[in-house]
Image 1 (cartoon, rainbow, N blue to C red):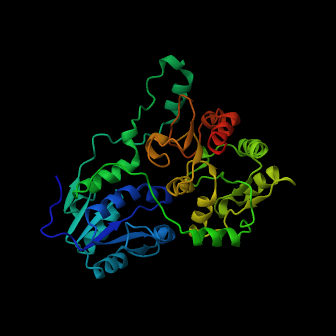
Image 2: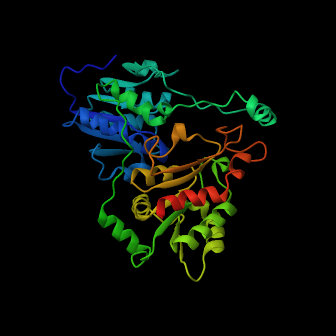
Length: 373
């Protein structure tokens, strides 16, 4: 059942998601919301660390920062001052619904979930195509890897329509917006790109620029081994004469230094920028790359939403659920593991990490070269 409005809402609050990749996957829904209410002032309540993601985005008029140190009552006070007509709650947590309830926003819509339905004026039931991530137990993993391939019947069968972007589109459809899919989209200006390239001494580079993002915040189970990244980067350099930008957070410094030392040579410069860029600079530099070789992590989603092709080894996670861009986009190359226990959705592998170890360097190199040559 759709939400009905006597008059089109003038001030809309969207309670945004808390993680970078999730935030990018909400952009199709936000663009559809903008289509439905072109004259509305749309405010996004977002984690402060993600606020810069939304600069120049046509779906959003302004952001309100959210920090972990703020009490729920302080947040509610900020929202109450915004005098919003209705709130769209994208996360499924009880707290996110309570925030808009305490702010006395008249209409509040979100998915029906335990411990929060009372705080919403209308709840949306789980859509028919939704697939819940199933974290496999160690005993289940051991059983799957011990069975013959033809006997395995418990692997998740995940349709493209299960992708996370459809979760958010389904929610805005309850407001009367179309649920037709769009590719996630982010925006940077040419001036930002030029400034970032100049700051990090990339403005004089005339050979192709490739990005490499070897970390993953969720845990080691999502990381293709560093030594495989090294061999792949060397081989791609030999075929293309390109230069590499290494991306990552401050916690990835040791990993990127290891890779930098292994792939830099007199013929090709490596720019190790892990932990050195702001979010807008990261976006501008990802936009500058001919391709990004990356694990399944936030910058993967950012690059794809900026139009940069990505090559991604997938082992413990599912591209059908959280892959980059619009499901099935040909420009992105997703190299999937065929391990019987994949995807397990665990932070750490309880056995031998076979899902990522079995993804061969040659597969990844060919995927990159398919894009750049």
